[in-house]
Amino acid sequence: MLKVDVVTAFADMIDGPLGQSIVGRARKAGIIELGFTNPRDFTDDKHKTLDDRPYGGGPGMLMKAEPLYQAIKKLRKKNSVVILTSPRGQKFTQTLAKELAKKKHLIFVCGHYEGIDERVYPEMDMEVSLGDFILTGGELAAAVMIDAITRLVPGTFKKQDVTVSESFEEGLLEAPQYTRPEVWRGKKVPEILLSGHHAEMEKWKREQALELTKKYRPDLLTTSQAKKATTKKGVKKTPKKKTTK
Image (cartoon, rainbow, N blue to C red; front, side, top):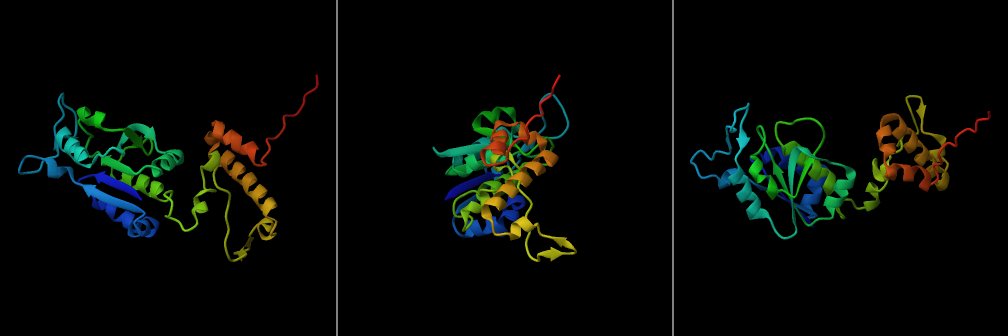
């Protein structure tokens, strides 16, 4: 079982979406346990103030260090990994999701407002970002990451190989897929997928995956992982033409 705790003042932004579909079923089955801790519970004023004006001026408000520190301190165990959702963090990838799915306890700390007091950053084991854009808070980013991680935890799917041939595995996008009916609005399913020749179908899927990656995400093909994928399982690189002088 994977235990996930989230430090946030806005739990509903995460709890609602992650109570549905596959993640919701995984929670009910006890495959993942999701808990929430409100940093307001660790404030010492009657208004339960979480934020204050930044020293040196500037727009917006910052989250205070002490409530976050106390919340993390309460939750942290020996095997915990504390993750701050942060625009300056490493980019969240499928590879990172797979690594985190192997952990026993994750603590997501959601920043809000204009950010958090710099002095609490050392309490984080890692900072992770969804991409080069700014959200109003870290809750939606945490929800996305938890979703991606949960589906990789053993037991979430009855057939765990569901996650093996997906986009970004081996550095390639996923090949096109089709379901019934065989002909839809004049468009037919590719004949190879109806042939029953599994080796040929797998070869076709690898070729299609490579073509889609070249078209939509050529940046993925610059990684050594992707280059390996294009030659390892039957997708051969186009040989260079010889030139004569």
